[in-house]
Amino acid sequence: MVLERTLSIIKPDGVKKSVIGNILNRFEEAGLKIVALKMVQLNKEEAEGFYAVHKDRPFFGELTSFIASGPVVISVLEGKDSISINRELMGATNPDEADPGTIREDFANSIGENTVHGSDGPETAAQEIAYFFTEAELVN
Ligand code: CMP
Image 1 (cartoon, rainbow, N blue to C red):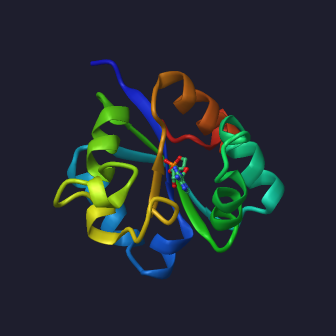
Image 2: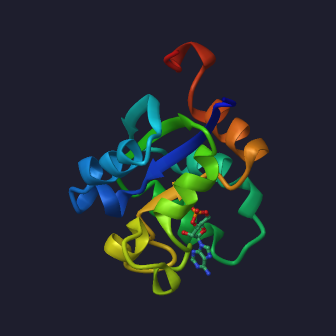
């Protein structure tokens, strides 16, 4: 079986709502292994580096200020098809369009404060994981 890794961030709104355990439990229940985990507060520069792909979007300032506004929980999830499984668990980016039972439908307030981030493809996942973790920090 080919294992795949993806990056997950529980955003400041998820941490404030005390749903860290609930969200991590959904990952584990879906068969994804948490192979790295940390809670940090990003500064604005780190947030801008992480979301650099969106730097020309009109919402870049709002996006980076929000992700740096409080603690976040960053994890690496591993398993077969982890990227698509995580995206299914999260639901649509805009919580108004997210399916019932997804993380964003259950907890998110708006497209900006949408509780979780997840990598959108294998290349992005590799870049995003390397942005926050060294290879030695990933459990085998
Ligand atoms: P995320 O998966 O973290 O990746 C980029 C983020 O940009 C996305 O979730 C949303 O939170 C945010 N985003 C996308 N579109 C908008 C928008 N129109 N206004 C504000 N934030 C947005």
